[in-house]
Image (cartoon, rainbow, N blue to C red; front, top):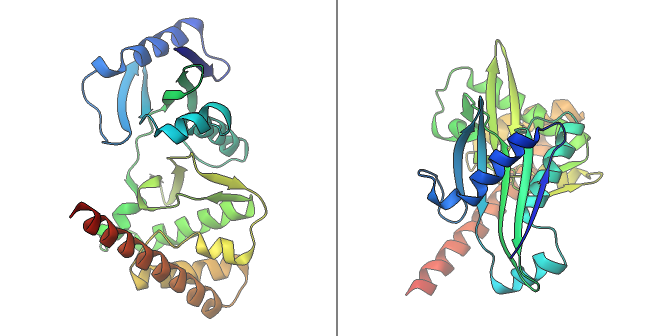
Length: 250
């Protein structure tokens, strides 16, 4: 099986060797979270690394990732570097590894620096009394607007994929789970639809609509009506998917 490994610049050879050793021994290292994809936090020297092992894809995708599409690991690595170039927060990318045969794609890993945060966006869904709640949600909305202005369509813009760090009276935001993104000029509908996965709670959509209207200089009602409709459409689609899964099991 052929190994492909790509590192970012300015890393010592000894550090690269240690990272490669961790990848080779990944299954033997205790701990880890996730079922489909497994993440383990592993320390090397004074740095904690976040190593994400992607599940081996189905047979069709093994062929596609071998010859047609970039792997999730490669896209995560390349998109992280692009985000940093655009001055958007994300954990520092270190490397990606791929393993393939002559005809099929197999395992892959994405390595980044572990970033400790104060909360994720998901906290805002589960704790409406979280300190400074309104300011955080509005700051997150401005962060999303900044993504859109820079031509970033984060397709997995969902509750667990934004880390939040508090710095005094301000907040910094960092994107994770990066393998699905588009980089292009975004029209109005695409921008608003990008909020659809973030919350089923109407009052949160109202706050985000209000703040986004200020950012884009557009009428609140126009933004809220579309954002709430797209949110409901996504929830209905999610519910239908769950029902189909239940039927399939039986």
